[in-house]
Image (cartoon, rainbow over all chains, first blue to last red; front, side, top):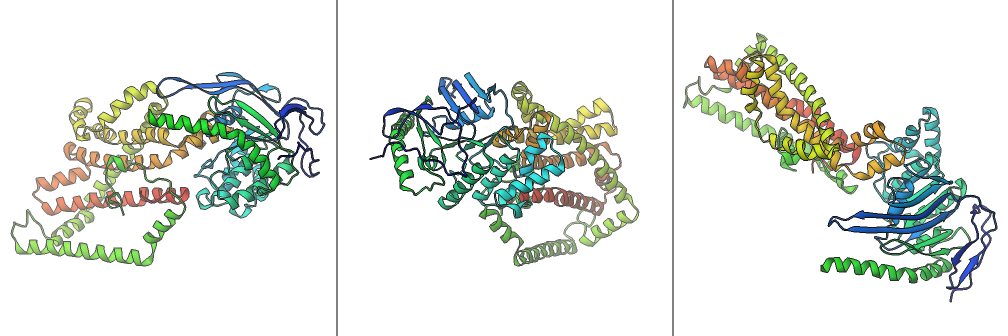
Length: 305
Length: 293
């Protein structure tokens, strides 16, 4: 049985997320008010209010992809979003990035409405997000160049962030010459180099092998601790979410809604193989299973028709 | 190796995209096979044997005198005609004039074709109307524009350029349109996300992202343009390679005709090899595309 929610003091080297005491479901199923690391909170970093998105399918019918999503993400928080495929979790990131507009509702960053893409919110894609016509260094430089930074500063920062992801010697390589894991590290460096407040990560490690993924988890956690960025991390892998997140948001299948939130207060650094991580993941997975079944049923129904 | 690889001036419409993204192992493996010393040596040996046999057969047939020499000249007669033409500069002037026309017409086609292609790709209305028209126009051989060109411009330089333009521009336009439509959307998203918009999004992201399509379009455009130009020159009878061909006919000088044909082939091959092959190779090695999928 899962022990009652524990609140373990975070390791000092990790940032203390600023969160309001929120009502949340504890892991033993009882709804409790969770008092989190008592910090009086200002405005949330990212705030979603009643965000809905619907679009026309090929057959012409209206499909509700996201249904009135309310979500507050706090400064410095590592938030993970899990859900079955097709629940709209990637779409949600695109909305926050400003690449798409919601049908209704409001998305705000630091209290201001998000209307267009901005370099304060950088999205990291699952794969192929790097530009193949540029070198690794030029890729990292790209956002800074668009921002109009001077050449000297661009070079400085490129060097710094490539070192941060341990790819200094690959500055002049082409993306296709790197392995999948290295490419995702370049994408991370490219995102960090514009010094965004918020990193949006769309299943960035899904296409990688397990060893590479483990290593990148460690690196990402370290970089997060060092830079204090707010991270919204979308994944279908619940263990990965528990491994990384301060909080895990479970989304339901079509229409995408926030089904439940789980606060993960396990000490950091965590490991994928830890018993506590596995146990917490299992608890979330039980809730997720219904949604996965719904998603599978929808797929089969589509095939039958 | 694919057929398109050898028929370099192939105008097959389907050979437009020069490669697809593959896993990382594939390009290296293919490149290895292509660039190993033994592979190159074998290819050269094969080619030497092939052309020697071809030349030998030609010489034999000429020696047998089945046809009179003024209809079927021997290789050495063609060689001496070639030499004579180069000596008295008539061939060199012909080449220079033809290449100058080609450069002017081609540059014009590329600029106009790109603008047209972009317009068609970025506007739904234009795509459904003009886009469809352009595709159907491509089935019209460019020689069909000659009567119209003569009536509009008379027997002038402009008329030749017009025929060349009509032969060349559609390939560039259609390739540009394809590139804009088929380039992975993720690049545009990543570009916008990193702060590029408007012209800079086009210049730094969309244009380079559609480069593989553009290069194939440029190559195809050159091939079409080259044919159109020679055809036009044959009819307009101004200085140029086409005119030299016709002059050979008028003088019953088959050696000259064949010599000029050889020059046309050689020039087309050289440009393709030096310009477009290099462009494709650079692109392939930079992007990690498989050579000629």
